Image 1: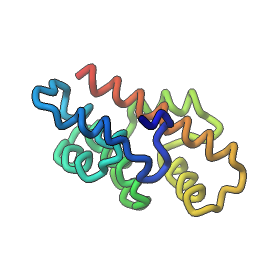
Image 2: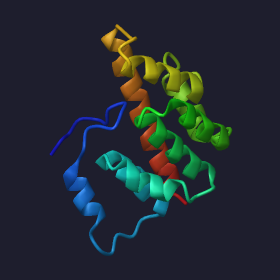
Image 3: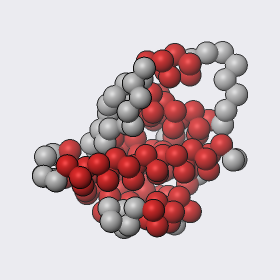
Image 4: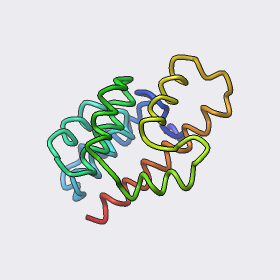
Length: 144
């Protein structure tokens, strides 16, 4: 099983998680499942859930999904729909060196993915901020 945190783009895939998500009787909120599909590396399945949920959290997962598929302008559109969100505020507090707002973060991720960020430490900070973002959003979705 791959124990690394998710990459900034559509990788790595976690087939064991994908298999668990297809088991009958999974009793989790739909948006938590959307986030788990992202974690499993299946952007299409995550997208099919998040695009049909008009809540801030649905838009949040939708924005993350587009960021991971390198559709950066579309990701920004979905983050505009998120608006002010407690997860965004908390991620900014925890990772202020790389996360001032979701739009700047998307720009930084794009630069890193296109090889324009030459400092490997910056990429590691981006990965950590993304992982924090995912965890906090998952907690938010599980609480609903």
